[in-house]
Structures are given as structure tokens and as C-alpha cells.
Image 1 (tube, rainbow, N blue to C red):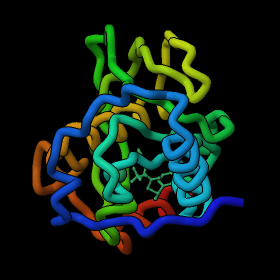
Image 2: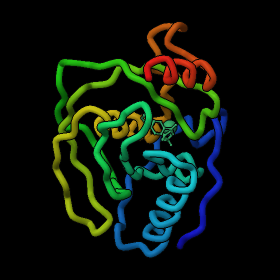
Image 3: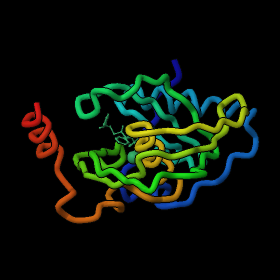
Image 4: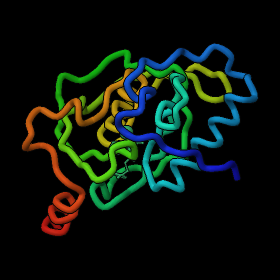
Length: 177
Ligand code: K3U
Ligand code: ZN
């Protein structure tokens, strides 16, 4: 298994930059970085990770949806690398729901996102993919795409009342059970 990489936190310059497009998909270093990102997201128990979170300013992220306590009906998805991703269409409808970020530890927030998006990206083999994503997977995609544009989920909060500590979030989960 590839090594896990160090995740950088809010304040690191790479998290504030617009990441660069990927040009050479067959670059062995790029394929190695994808393997490292997959190990990193798995070991951190995340459902996604973007290259800028490991200080690599490239337009690449991993989506690894799985059911979890907040989203028990989320689909299980093997870690999938998405290169040069973009949204080509989106629903009018937005939904506010919980997010966290491995680069902003201890903070949770209720973030508005499009409920449905149509996306394009290159997979790690270089094939162009076009897909419609909904609900939790659409949320992960939008969260990760923001990382490529230097935006954190806390920048998307509409009110201070939508920002919570990890403890407050855990209490709200316990009350909804
Ligand atoms: O706390 C996390 C979480 C895991 C499963 C469901 C809900 C939350 C980990 S935070 C996480 O996985 C981020 C990953 C990041 F920060 F690297 F991008 C992705 C994410 C979590 C929740 C909603 C949208 C995106
Ligand atoms: Zn994040």
C-alpha cells in the first residue's frame, strides 16, 4: 500500500490557490500521487480528499463515498480519482447539510450545495467521464472542487449560526438518533 501523506491545514498557502490543470495523465509521478491520496483518505476516514490538501496544487481529487452516521444511505463507492473535474450543469435546488474537512479540524458546518450536478472529469486511465451526481456524492464533489479553487467549506457558510464545533455536531447527531 502507498504511504499516507501529511494533510495541511487552514492557513497553508496551497489551500488558498487555484490549482493547475493536469496535462500528462500518464506521468508515473501523477499515478503515484493518486495512490498516496487514496491511502491518505482511507487512513483519515474521510470521504474525499483533494490534491491541494497534501500541498500539491493540481486539479485532482478522490471521492470515496460510504454510508456514515450523518448520511446512512450514502452509496458505497470505491475511491475514485477525478482529474480536471468540472460542473457542466446543476439543479436550481440547493440543500443545506453537514460538512467537515480534514484541513479544518474540529469544525463542522451546514453548507448549501446544489442537490444534483452533471460533471465531467478524466479518470486515472485518461478516459473522459460524464456523470450525473446527486445528494451526498454531489456534495463531496462540490466540496472537493472548491479545494481546487482555494475555497473552504467555512467560506460557504451563510450565517455564523451554521458553524459548529465537533462537540456540538456530535451532540446533534446523538439527539437525532
Ligand atoms: O468528517 C468527515 C466526514 C466523513 C464522512 C461523512 C461526513 C463527514 C471527514 S471530512 C471529509 O471527509 C471531507 C474530506 C476533505 F476535507 F478532505 F475534503 C469531505 C466531505 C465531508 C462531508 C461532506 C462533504 C465533503
Ligand atoms: Zn475539505
